Length: 542
Image (cartoon, rainbow, N blue to C red; front, side, top):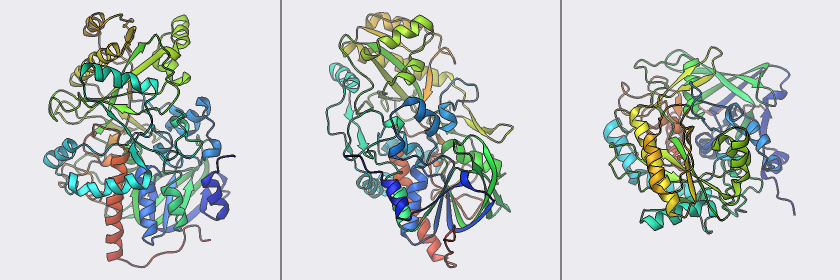
């Protein structure tokens, strides 16, 4: 029996959604609340605010892809579901930046790992960045609400062989490890979460909050790129968008002007600051786009005698925070250890090498394991993150310098990962670096890691999550928004996404975005009700 396409069934019932690529003339729209971005922050906001009775228009740059479109093919998924066709890089081209671009945003393509914001992070935000109302007790009911809403519980099945390497190695060494909570219901354990879920098991925004918002009368406009906010320095009067072609590559020449009572920006840690930069939004203290963090990632590969088959099963189910907080919040950079899935196209790039060398590595893929370290940036004076800038065409790019402080974290993470992999029974371990060679024992690996020249392009670096760039805080001289997500200067603008974070969080951030933006959306709805000037009609007028 075929899997029902929940989204397409809803559209057939009358959900209001418009494909901007099909416009044959310019469009003017009016609504109560315009939400820019349909990922974790935007869709959560849309569900809560539409349920409160507001007319909500959800605007997404990417295309609408549903479970019927997800065929678990890398060549299709990467080109259609990721920012810049999975080609988004740091300004120097040394760091890969993976972000979703589709209706549902990154929630459509993430690996489902869902963690509450760590308590040390929340304490640091309060003490060092003046963030108010985001303590453990403040957020606990919102975490519980979103965990129930999205089916977030520790993974109930045994880990696949790929994740079990991390468990076995930590257990053998007496290191802490735990099971990852995942936002799934009825998961088929396919292992292709990064290409969209073809069975609607992943509780992404595509199958949860966006449908709920549309059921409440909300409206969706997709393939519409937000270009500029029109404002007088105090209030926004309109949002200007351009219609994109079906591949979301080039503008069609049609434009959309959106007028709203309130605007919610939820484009994520690069696109949200970029829209404000293009709009020349007030930035008296020059914090916009600054302190943008990545959870810089380095990798260690290992060869096992038995098959690992790293392309099958739940992509992530085991993690270790053993090295995360052991040196305190602001000591040497801490890191979270996880395991990525290795599908062929991704693996061929990640494992590196050329010609015969790369071919041999790929031939050995069923026996290959890779571990990654999420480096917790932003907690130390020598970890100030990067800056979002605009290219000549207005598109965003992140300038992210890697400091000696971060390189020290990379080297220590290489050591930790090699030790765990050998403890789990690896025959050989290969830190992913241009100059590394497979080590046959831990002593050989340690000697090699200590000798590695850790530089950009020599060390294979990725990133896991983009956070910051519109940091929240009490003092406008040190932040872009207040602790309720309200822009300090533009009174009818709120920001509801991970760009609010004053640091990285030290964990996969999707649940943090869900819970924090749910709280902010509820409070926004109450404030707007207190100052109600009457609600407007449907944006689409029919």
